[in-house]
Image 1 (cartoon, rainbow, N blue to C red):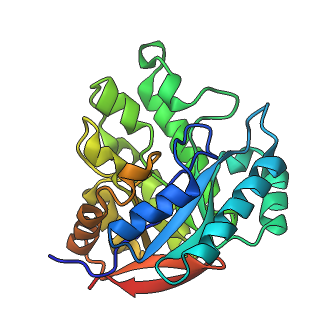
Image 2 (image 1 turned 180 degrees about the horizontal axis):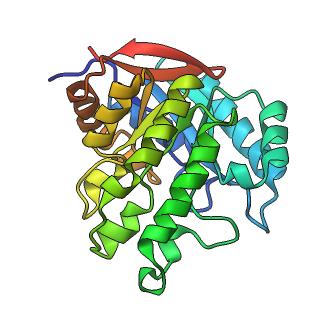
Length: 269
């Protein structure tokens, strides 16, 4: 179906350690692609030993504030941040949230405590099921904390375990804890992200996939955000309409955007 309100709530500018293009480039591309709302959510992997968190957040906040003002007549720009591993440094995470007046916070885990990003692990050196159990246990802890608005790429490790290494994973083994995560999201009025980046990887699927999105809906989930996870301006809005179709097929009729961290339901059509 045709979607009228295109929104991308997960993008990275050059301010992210792995970003490539300016906030200005992200916004101009979003306008060209007909987006109504764009959230710029640069990485703040808050457990990084060498990261000056407050310096990064100040730079990013000022850059997003500038484009928010510049594009106000063409595009709604949300000043956002993706806080990675916030559960491991809660005091610093809260300091960031109290210092800056964000519109939108993504919560994520890219690594377990004192470990490398899942991207860098050699999965033949680990019991994959033990890794995933620990990952979902920590996501469960995150889901019960008020340090984010939308839970990003719930099945993040599958990018590497399934898409890259071609390992089969029986996700049914984690259904109970995933249900508990969804229950926390519903209870705490948090959103679940449909991350479309996996559509363009070997896995050819969203993170999480439609079966988990349907389960979130069954448990009472109301708030869905959709994000491309683009690290290049050219990929802004990539897969967003497919993500919206998946959300629609799962029973949702609205996408959620956030203003000053308050959820706003926006009809798909």
